[in-house]
Length: 98
Image 1 (cartoon, rainbow, N blue to C red):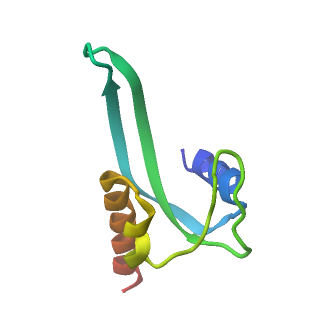
Image 2 (cartoon, helix red, strand yellow; image 1 turned 180 degrees about the horizontal axis):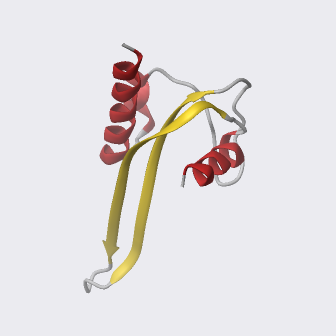
């Protein structure tokens, strides 16, 4: 899984992580239609990593990429569960540096 995450990161942002990837969370989401039938089933495996050298560039199905302060994430209209995973990853990185 980590190699797939590295490949996706490179395809979507042009970045290569420095050091190991750390598993943050596995999110399973099932979206149903009006009649209750499964319309979409997503399983997202969330990793965190330190950014490697280079400037990020949007690629693949990524519309834009930028480094922003975590306190500014609210302005981007991200889903609540996405913000939770990002904050968890950030807290893990801070904790692991101590």
